[in-house]
Length: 207
Image 1 (cartoon, rainbow, N blue to C red):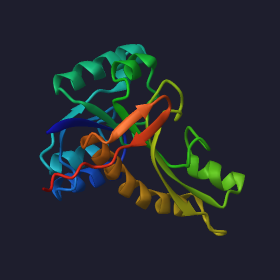
Image 2 (cartoon, rainbow, N blue to C red):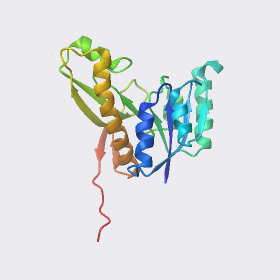
Image 3 (cartoon, helix red, strand yellow):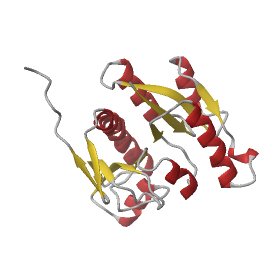
């Protein structure tokens, strides 16, 4: 069974969707560890409620991003994880970390990339006046939300939407496509060609 690590900074609702998908049997993976850069992250509580090991590595304890990331790498490699999943991990990762886990980091972003990268994707969409928004799962590269795209989901932007109401509608889709993306990865159905992701057909095991 493939092992993943989930990195969180806040409430961890996407983490919960992954946990639920594992416990239901939809995902055949092991969450080896949930790691946060904040001791008060509710994502850690979610993990503990399900018997999943947790670690805290506070970025404030280090003099540089590189020192912080070297410690992250040391912890994660200690769990022999094959994939790092960013589920609301609010730290910009440097090439040191990204290259160590080349094509082995998946993130989710609350916008239809390449539109509205970075923070506050929902607010950016509303300010721009788009008719549709959504979310994107993608592999992480050295840019900001620029890595190869796995799955995208679209939601309408309503005339009376606020950042919160649009965010909640997008979040429901995040909870759907994040486990779906991990399922594709765990089944070996993702092929990265340049900056494009090719989804391979599932091979039937039936006679």
